Image (tube, rainbow, N blue to C red; front, side):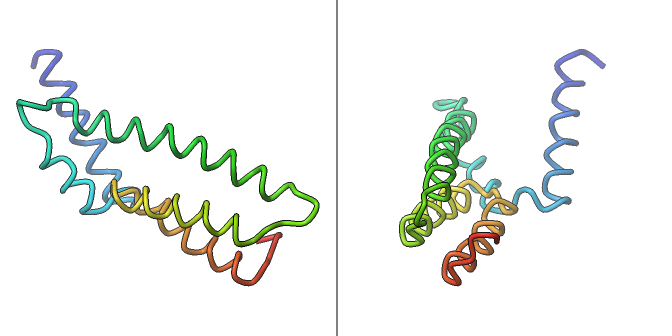
Length: 112
């Protein structure tokens, strides 16, 4: 088996484990179907943008939660945006955590 075949097999195995463990869902498969010869880096580009946006959102969340008086509407808006972007790329576990986080925002539960 050549190196490329071995790397492709490792990628398939890793992707399969991400689905099995609930990190990814069918939305990621739909994203992969949009990639073709005319845009071979499509998934990489979308996921890279997701990570860049996620870093900004997490920083904004951290800042909002550290305020003397927490604006739960603002926190909820950041979480809502994070939930939408994670859902759009198939990051199921992130989306699920955002759902729980939104519930804590509604309860104004800072500890949560």
